[in-house]
Image 1 (tube, rainbow, N blue to C red):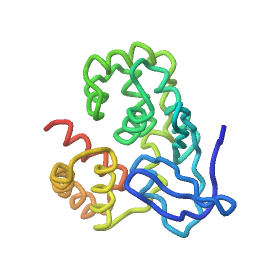
Image 2: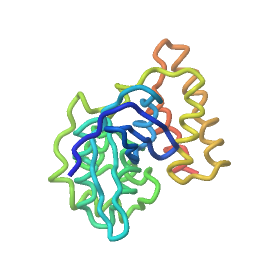
Image 3: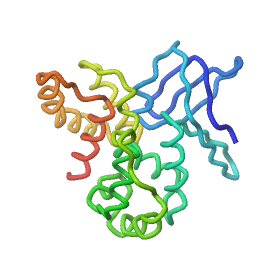
Image 4: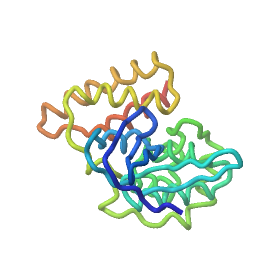
Length: 208
């Protein structure tokens, strides 16, 4: 198992990053919030989890080991594969996700693309007693590690939505929907992070 990768970021794409390790470019699939914190040419360390299939080996990357552990736990629930688990962590930070499962907040879980009410009920049933207690440090997931953004957030949120499979038109609408939130937060002196804006955009799409 590859526990983590460390090296300069060679490229950042809507759904993955390429990290140079020992002269080799390693493709790491990441949630948009994690990708938003990466910069080409800057060294990064990503906790990783490898998913093995008959025809592929896929490496998923995370901001920290706690996020990776939750990603792996989520996949033990019936019907939850790596893509759904990653989408869950894209919409909710680790702390928020643990809280949603522990308190049986089906509405929050259904905000994740690909999860319906029955799927949310199954996740709660199977993971409620195993998900652990949210900690203050993980309440916002990896968003605390992200730098505060200006208008760059629009491109990053749009790219994140496209990477999760949303059509361009719907991604554009979602960006415009959360723009007033971004402006209001910025005016108050406490700008929202890209991760927070992305999650708000995903929630707006789930209500369409």
